[in-house]
Amino acid sequence: MRRSLTQWLRLFITLLLGWSALACSAVSITLATTTTAYDGRNLPSCGYDPAQQPKPDYDRGSALLFSKQESQLLAERALLAVFAEFVAAEGEGGPLIQWEFDFVKDLNAQRQGYGPLPAGEKPYQLTLFPDTPYDRAAQYGGSTTPEQRALAAPFSFDHDPSLVTHYYEGNGQGGLPGFNLTQTERIQQYESLNGNIVPRSMQNVQGRQMMDYSIQQKTLRGF
Amino acid sequence: MKTQLPYVSSEGGPIIIGDYNDLIHWNGSDLTLYNQACKVMEFALMPIEFSGKRGLIWDFSGPGTAFLVKKGDAELVFIKYWSRPELSDSSLVELADVATESISSNSLAVMSGRVLIIWAAEDASKIVPPKTAFGRPKGLAIDGSGYFISLAVGNYKVDTSHYFKNEVEVAALRLRRLDDPMEGA
Image (cartoon, rainbow over all chains, first blue to last red):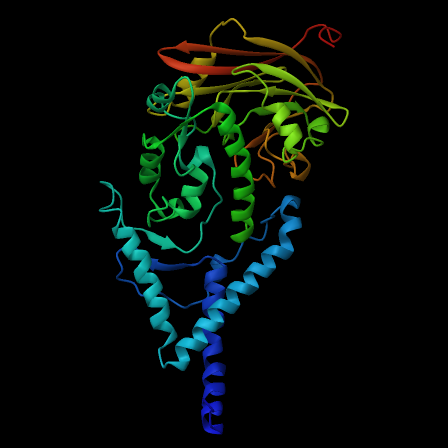
């Protein structure tokens, strides 16, 4: 389809005007700002909040230096994907806010999939990215429970999915990732008897694989 | 988490402990080295050599977390426990207060005054130590899987044990400085 000069001009102006909104949105995403509320009453905000910037003393450490290039590449690709989607939406006349609203709706639907919040817990903000990296003891619990240990004896109890996978990606059945669950819900997942019984040697191998996975996730999420 | 005690976690695979100046040469992402470390028996201690350095491998039985429950200039105790609900700091300290028969013993020379305890799958050469005498290093592949502790320079006796106290299963690692500096060397 051939566009007229007017159409090109309109597209150019639309892109120009839309750029600030896009940039704002991209900054929001990359800095892992909050985009939605659990109760769904607050529409996503597009304000750039300086408080969401990494702290001045934040230091990723030398361990992540090697992954800097990969991190940049991933960020650029994510930005391009957002841009492409925006252009597509504009081309069809759909506003960017609709696209973002749909995304938020999906998150809320996922949250609803977990049922009501545990008793005594207040509605909370869902986030696009975790605020802190996975830490087994802090977010789930220390060692396996006595019940899990007894169930698996003389072998080892293996959470399915692994806790680190659950934290970053959820239960693999459409549920929210662990970082978007309450501490009570994470503990419930941790204490669940749904898992595998594996020999220690296999768990050693899996542990090693989880280390690689964790590095990948930390890089992807800018930790 | 109820406790405020320092801890070290594993997602599967043993823990390594040693003088910081030695362990900075430990690279758990080297599969040969990691597999060698995984040969340690359950609850036991196994010396391991790498790049001309030495460390001690401790298998605390599967994934989990060991807490630093006792710390003096010349002594420290880590314990891993299996219990629900989680235990408070004071209960954890009580768990360590027990005279038990050790499963395995070895010695460790602490020459730098700093000990690193870390999950064996980690690459210790990539971590950045804390500026304080003890604390969590930066650059760990998984947060919580390593910890720095300051200890008096000297030779230490290291014991591991496995026991039950108040129906709670416990795995423990104890470091105690030898009175005679030459002992255990």
